[in-house]
Each structure stands twice: as structure tokens, then as C-alpha cells.
Amino acid sequence: RKMMPRAAHLQTMFGLTNSEARLAEALLDNMTLEEFAQTQHVSYNTVRTHMGNIFNKTGTTRQPELIRMLLISAPHVTL
Figure 1: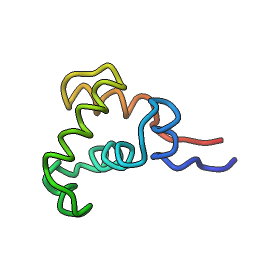
Figure 2: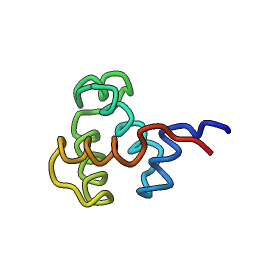
Figure 3: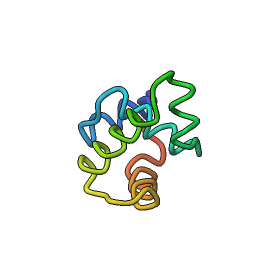
């Protein structure tokens, strides 16, 4: 069995863009929004916009709820 990259799985499952999937993956890796903004060389406001899009696409409203949903949806991804 091949492993499907976690970001690709999140994109397929929730319809996330590349940037949104990278942010979701970073959150699963315990990165803060500020750290993500710095590592991706984007503004904090851009990251907040991505978060809003992720909330909308996943039907969540709070970060802990989002993390829980992401963990449940893709604990380990295999093809």
C-alpha cells in the first residue's frame, strides 16, 4: 500500500487549496498561526483568511474542533 500525503488527503476530503492544506497540516504539527505565517513568508492576515476558509469548508468554528476533525479524518492515510 502506498501512503497518500496528508495534505493531499485533506485537499481531497475537504476541498482545500494547497495553501489551506499546508496550514491544516501545520496545525496538526502543533504550529501556531504566527509561526506558519513566518515560515511561509505571508502576512498573519493571510493566514487568518485561510483559517476562515478552512472553517467554512470543514463546517467547524473553533480551532480545537477543527484539529479534532482533521485528526479523525486522516489518522494515517493509505491507498
